[in-house]
Amino acid sequence: MGRETMKLMVVSDLDGTLLDHSDYSFDLVLPVLDRMDEAGIPLVVNTSKTRAEWLAMRGELGNFDPYVVENGSAIYDGEKVETFGVSRAEILDFLKSLRAKFKFKGYSDVGVSEIMQWTGLGRQSAERSADRHFSEPLVWQDSPEKEDEFCDLIKERGLRTLRGGRFLHVLGQTDKSKPLQYFRKEKVAIIALGDRPNDLAMLKAADIGVIIKAPGDYVLEAKDMLLSKEIGPRGWAEMMTQILDRLQIPQSTTNNG
Ligand SMILES: [Mg+2]
Image 1 (cartoon, rainbow, N blue to C red):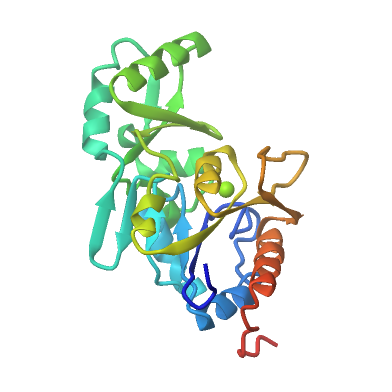
Image 2: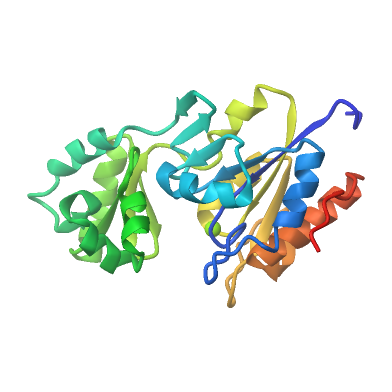
């Protein structure tokens, strides 16, 4: 593979990887993004967030490349939308049939104020988080045994569950790795970065998988992958700089002060 013909693409998780959990600042990664931009390397954000959430923040990054939302459920590429998950209507329909048997409350059952309480988000952000098309976050209110039983039924129906923080997410049978096949149609080498178990399939499906260190003792375990020394976006900038240096991608000519 000659470097002249090899196209690169960076696919990245957002929270805890490109984005800091505490201050939501992009300052650390902007110089690296300038460098990628000048070299024509796209940054595809692959997030558990909704489309509305990403659209509200991508301007700050100056990023208008294709993106993947709701844990591998759909790619938005200009006017094109490619779906890998199932519609939220279908999910809600199936959940309706389980209500007699299990106790749970989903986003669709409550107003924005309750979502604000659940998530700690402000009103606008909570509204964007509630603007879902392919998944439903649930607050589980039944026993752990019942949760197992519930998850089995979801699976039998051809859907899947994903535990993340306080929510049990119900979504289609997809993950963050599935959309990569869409980008493989063009010959690209994919560098993927992420910090949590829901990123693992994506990291494995990439040519170069990079684990970004999380705060505390948590380390995502995986073989044959690079691991950052620094945490979050600092680790993202550290690893991408290393990789771009090794590939002899020129430094950005933009003066970032
Ligand atoms: Mg993350």
